[in-house]
Amino acid sequence: MANINPVLILSVGGSLALVLLLVGVVLTYRSSRSLVDERLEKYLGEEDLARLEEERKAERRQREGALDRQLARTSWWEGISRDLARADLRLKPMEYIWVRVGLTIGGAVLGYAIGGGSLLFTLTGLVLGFYGLGIFVKMRQRQRLNRFNSQLPDMLNLMVNGLRAGYSTLQALEAVSREMPPPISTEFQRVVREVQIGIPLEQALDNLLRRIPSDDLDLVITAINIQREVGGNLADILETISATIRDRVRLKGEIRVLTSQVRFSGTALAVMPILLFFIIYRMNPHYMGQLIHPDNPAAKPLGYCIIGTGLILIVIGYVVMNKISDIEV
Image (tube, rainbow, N blue to C red; front, side):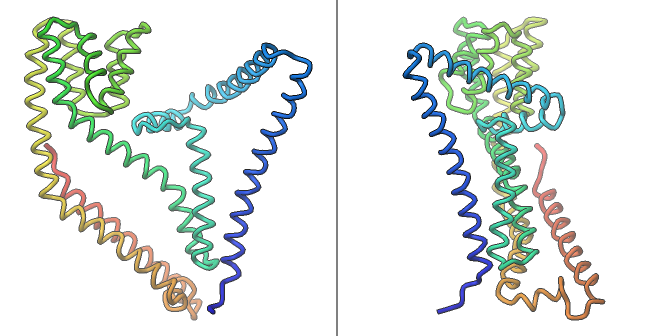
């Protein structure tokens, strides 16, 4: 039977113990609160208990709201809120921060366990854990934006039919929110709700554009705002815009198919050297470790220069291949 690395056992056991400790603290806190409620129930009625619980919730929301208001004044906090809204993630900025901290710690522990206590693996896990959630949010934003743009021509056709049937602009937008699938229906539901609570339509559409940074949507919103100011046949304008957007979507799809090989090659060539480095390092730490901890201490800066040069060349190659495949339409 192969010897099991004691560092791996301690790392996994320590992580499991930390998780169990957190779960135990939460359960203990909840059970103690329920015990207090049971004791209060002997002396208070259900209405008093309900009022007490509402006061607790209001106090908690007030504390959280005060902290959010203080942090919301910073551009960093506003950027997190905007990114979460664009990715359609039902997370508060503070929850996002806590999840990111947890993933960073978890990635470092996992890298430490996999690498057998290696500092290189630990730092790699820490970096991947820290940036992993941000990369996931960016991917969600890009996927949601692509789905929105692909649904935009059908949305314009529905809106044109509604306008020609005698609907107002707001009624046509409301029909879009009912008939179209997500994400376009979700976004226009928010627009309709904002108008219903008293926000001007122009401001509601500007809020939509901040959540969905689409050039095609910007063109549609500009047409709607100009028509509301100077008049004109909005149905004909939107029909022309719809035909233009359809041609652009079709052309983008063809370009994406033709450049898929370049994009895949760029990703594969960027990931493969890094992946092979860690695989070989895990199989033979002494061989690859010469770049980090050489037998001759005087050669240590040379190893770091080799690693740094390799990473720089990988990044340059990835950026260049992405620029080649990124064709503006």
